[in-house]
Image (cartoon, rainbow, N blue to C red; front, side, top):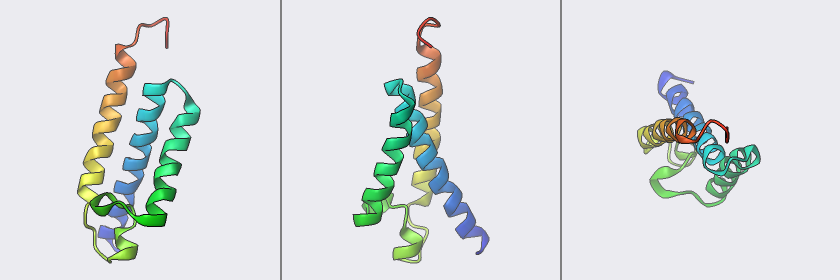
Amino acid sequence: MNTGQALASYANAIFLGGLGIFATAVSGQVVFGYMIPILYYVLDLMGGSGSFTLFSLLRKGTMEGKWVLLMIGIVWIALSLAWHNKKPSHIR
C-alpha cells in the first residue's frame, strides 16, 4: 500500500463518518447514523455511484473522486456541528 492509497482510504472513512454524523444530527437518532452509511456502502458496492464511488481504487485503479468525497465528508461534519449547536439546550 502506498501513501496515495492510504489517503484514499482516509477520504472514504471521513466521507462515511461525516455521512453518519450528519444523519445522526439531523434525525436525532443514533441508529440512522449507522444505517445511512452502511446503506450507501452496500449500494455503492453493488452498483457504484459515478465519481462518488468508494471503490474507485478497486474498479478503475484510480483515485478519481476521492478529493470530492473528502470535502463532502468535511462539510457534513461541519454542518452536523452547526446543526447540533443550533438546537436549544433542552433538546440536546
